[in-house]
Image (cartoon, rainbow, N blue to C red):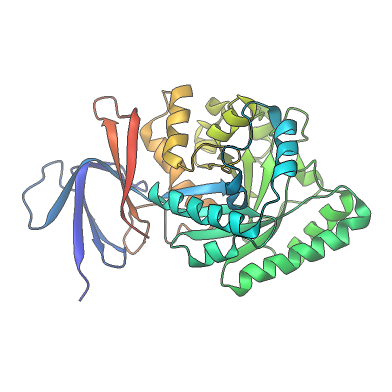
Length: 372
């Protein structure tokens, strides 16, 4: 017979519904949400009730990561700009397989400790496959292609198809994606587009507006397909006019913000104010990028960084960006992202919360109470 735990805190944030003062989450041994109880703010004594000082939220979703670069933690200087960062990655990414695998495994564990339950991860090889296969977290792998030489396009795309199949053979979700609009040749764009037309992946990801020189209308090369989620990652130089061009399209666009990485590389943040309208706030997700461009893999730290820039953003919106929106973007929202019955979202406790101002304080921490 399955045991049911009753978890409570000063506030419970179901995400799909308003926060509950002294609410109770009922979760069984499998991590499945059995019930969410609105106590009306009055918490009576209950047998075996677990009460925590803080807030309870669903497990976090990291919508953008490069697990295979974890061995570069601390190896690359900060604030060297995008071109300098890319050059450093090319020069230093090669390492023994055992080194890369050990670092990826440690990074996977770090994310788990930081309350992350699902990851959208960029891969250029199969080096992280064993980690993803054995991880309790859910991964969606984006097999990345790039190359500006048309004559090599067929070789690049064939290799990507084989790599995608390697992940799928292990029961892992994977799709082929372009790195960015500026890093793929015309022939390679066409191969990607044709593959999407014949077998549309559920989710794709593309680095988007990381520089001021980058073309932002990437679908001038790939027509937008309505049955796919598009994760546009970084948006460091996005403008209101650019973002508005996405609204009339039929595609399902999500905007992934990785603020700590943006500061690390370019000492610049996206204009978060652009994403606060009703149209866009429902489409924003959070990511950590890699340990080559970040000092940690923590969605909570990304939230803190955003609050420092834009303290007027409500905790309700930030938590939606950190949980349900990411789950929707990655196609995991039937299981993750909110405290709805029969989901298995994981349960995180956040301590270090200013209840009067409804704000995270600088030393806020997260602890996973229930895995997904």
